[in-house]
Image (cartoon, rainbow, N blue to C red; front, side, top):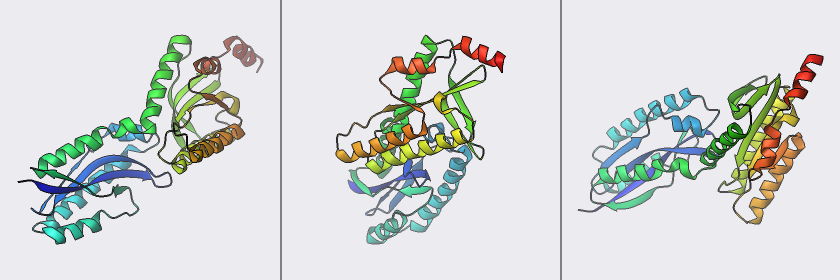
Length: 281
């Protein structure tokens, strides 16, 4: 017997100000039969901490453990409910609200078995979550660029945390030679809305500004290598131009990701000059 299975994707959103989230589970229910169940990503889910590069891993661990308890309570409370009673309860549970854990809009599928449907929905949405996001694209950019740097230069760029004086966060490509620090941060501007694009850019502009003010990095030795938005809409172009202007105002280098030769020129250290300067100092 086929039944309608309604579902909401469970989202982990640690930074409400940027509206960035990762899909980490599914809550599903079938009003006709009273079925209700959920499936969550593992408590130790490295892709989440990779997704949010400055996230405390314990935050996700605690959040998902607490949310598991809430979902178990919901299952227990809803036991025996069917039809409109179950729908009303689930509408209240999945409504839009603030918090680390939020829900998507409710969707529906027709299935022979609700358990099989839950598994399929989880695999479809959580399995591909990181393949269609700017963070995933930026990871690809870092990986490719690190290979280019290793192949063409005699200096190693690696992930490293830098301190602003009041906090620290990771940057993917950092090198230090003769007490000179160079940093490269790839950014992909393929967000779904102009506001999300602007928020992503502003977040990194603010971080780099704090690093410069703390004298952690010289502005001449920081590079944003960027990919423009794919959308041709005027709103996206305007948001991107404003972000790019903000980067330039910092005094840092800004180079398109496609210009690999210019990136390599920036990344290379003039060791003879640096050694002479170090001796003079």
